[in-house]
Image (tube, helix red, strand yellow):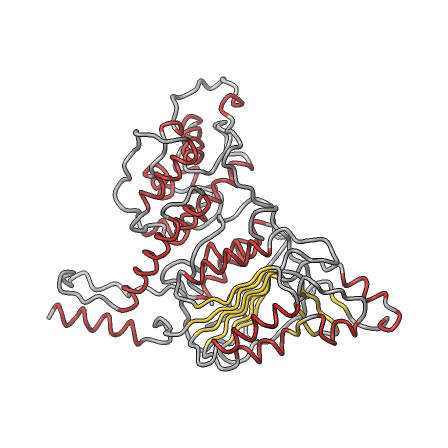
Length: 470
């Protein structure tokens, strides 16, 4: 009987809605930074590399490119179009310059030199509507992410051209409607511009995508609601992602099996295909970075698998890389309470912990020991809030920059190097003595976000106006 209950539970999960793991997954991922005729962009090439890794680790066949000319970009699109025939899920991700002329959106290769409307329409730019229709029309589910709403230097040239004085050239991209089975997400609202991140990091939009779409068992539209909130918070409400969806069922980039009833005997329960593939994906991701010497790649694993099989090893490696090898580490406590990943923290919840100055110093030291450098002052100032938010995003917790009891307990349970927890300093000891060295510090714009890197879980319904049907 127990075996029967287990079997029924798992079969019900696999056939419910459209939640089952897709068999054929294809993605187009391109980032253009090195523009030849206008100033270069700091993030797109990094954004595309990060997103390609995210998608590969959840089973996508990725057609990837960076800093592509018109001809090279066309070749990649042709390859993507052939691979997406009959695909269960097709993803289109582009980061770089884009432009809207008379309500039509275009993506710009690095050799684009736009001086008038005719330059745009006769081949120097790539028409988004035509491209998506030609490359993704045969896919069952189509997910489009455009991190291309940057302030475009070509716009002024086109507006000033004598032959096109009456042309409408928007600052950002124009609104687009999605067809059946399609989700379209922009880094910001129609006609608005998105922010670049600092050089060497991801843009706020891509960083939020990486931090949220990779979470196991998270439906894409739920993930995009979190993306919207993270970008808005990180940019102090200066940027608000926008999108449109016409999906007809649930879509998961990283599905996990439904939990079996408590009465089920685990030794008799069969392993679902979704669970096995999710486990295989995690293992493949770990193998790809297990010998790395880069803290950000280890943090990428923790971002996507906050309770992963190799969590303790990754944390130990981060501590060793950040502070030097150490033989003295703390063991992790029992598994993290699942509520840690859903319960949001705020000022009230943090006050309820009752942290004194010494405990705040300890939290700051621990964050530094885990690779999230911050000055040890005993005060949770703006810098500390930014670091707390980055740590939360990296672990898959709600990124609010405040702690609650569950998150504080989780922080205390993480392995830290011996240098991360020195003896308590006197309250009047100058905080500058404990300033972190800039050695492994990672930079984020406007309050920080999730670290780069990591795999994915992608977007029914109207989500706070972000993905409402229109």
